[in-house]
Length: 236
Image (cartoon, rainbow, N blue to C red):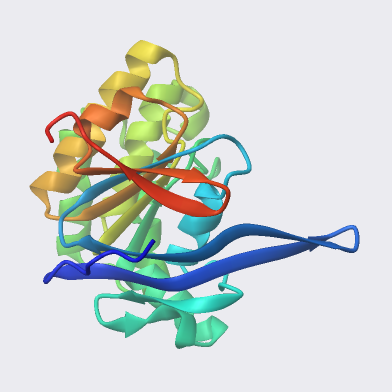
């Protein structure tokens, strides 16, 4: 279903399809998806395992390319870039939050947070100051020199949120960010993520099984049979 592009769209998805070949057979995960997300929106993707939620996040992040169609982010046709250009765009413009945190065990909390800045070949006193500010906002400034294995799951995910924001990306992609946490800790992490991304004016696209996050989102999409179906939010 084609939707009207918001006048201030940050993300435009145009007729995107994605197919995979497995065991000699072709499987279509996304089929002719067309939609757009306005600047500053918090978008939730719902769907069962294998429905295409993570696939769409990987396409938005330039980790993978669609079989057909295009994705434009902040005026840049990401799908028209080669792999190296997509990698550089991803490092500069996108922050990732994963279900299993993906913190490097040999780096301290502060070093983990600063990693995206270092990958962009910049590390100034201002960057370090901002990282410490983020640590304070996620309530873990006193753990700056701690290693990840000394932290709880909720603490590690709060560090992952700070890491996703430290290089000032325009888009945050979160793939089941509370999937490895208990309900109470997951709620705390969701509220923190919602507050920090809105506070900094970022777009947030989250794939999740959890219905609890729906009430926080600006827009909610259900992925079924390769299509995005927008659902009414609580606010609507």
